[in-house]
Length: 151
Image 1 (tube, rainbow, N blue to C red):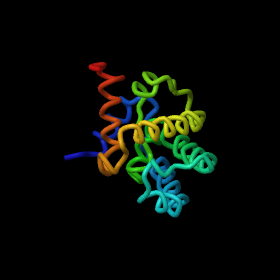
Image 2 (image 1 turned 90 degrees about the horizontal axis):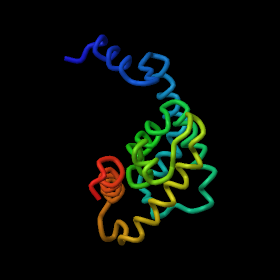
Image 3 (image 1 turned 60 degrees about the horizontal axis):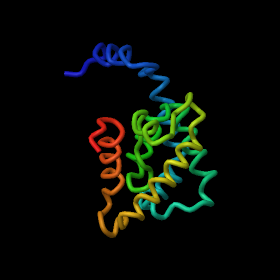
């Protein structure tokens, strides 16, 4: 059984973690504020990403990052639009040359990460070849490359 005490202990173990009612309220407000935009991205593939979307994508990532951090923002956005937003974590980002900086300063890095991932998707034949789980497959490949270094 998960208790409030267990959640609190977990939060104290994590670096910079906030699991209080204000943090949850901030997340709920963020989701409500961007529900329409996220709904429009839900069915899209990263292959459809266009240069004219840079400002919008960076602003969206920036708002999520300020609440969730750079890794949390990427994970949340991926869950909300799994074919459009690629995953990253600190090991993968730095291994690929995208060293993450302090919270609220990584939107351009994430945009460049999206462009790189889009190129990789196209190079392997895109979703037409691999199906809608392609971004997760690329994340697993990056995990092997940059985190456990088996490739």
